[in-house]
Image 1 (cartoon, rainbow, N blue to C red):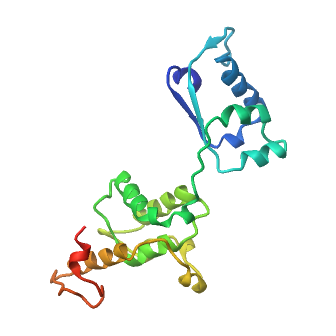
Image 2 (cartoon, one colour; image 1 turned 60 degrees about the vertical axis):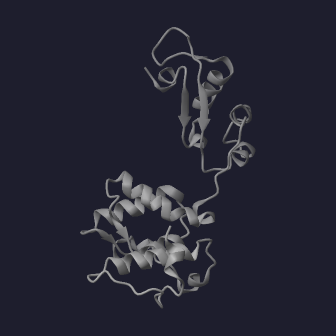
Image 3 (cartoon, rainbow, N blue to C red; image 1 turned 45 degrees about the horizontal axis):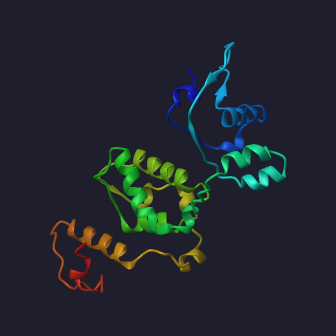
Length: 207
């Protein structure tokens, strides 16, 4: 049936739109302009009513200037533009993303040590969320037990010493809660408030 025909009456998501070949760009442009297409191997034209959502990690404006992407297709696609900041610019999202990825892998009960989470937050993530997902999948595949630690993470996540001083947009509460959870999971399961390691009242961490 094909993806375009299957999306008739709905939405078609095209990832990495910048990698479309010139011939495919022409075909997509026709679909957007005329709302019809000719299936591969067919001899008739089929009308479709679809919404197109396209994504890319490239600067399409630059691709247009360099002649790698059609200007008319660019303007057709660029009706509503949403720019998602790179993962390194929204490090506060990483703990939530890690939990989501673990749940998607069926390992939602895994605990992540504060050291491992700190390393994940400090990494620059040039590959953004996909790289993060790959790192978590790799760690889960190489570990046993129910606690993901630094030694389970890929070696590529190691950070130079000078990066330890970088400013992170992550609240102290997250690290304090991680430490508290680790202490509560120790054999005796006891912690005396306020603990010197947290240096803050436990009631401030009740959420």
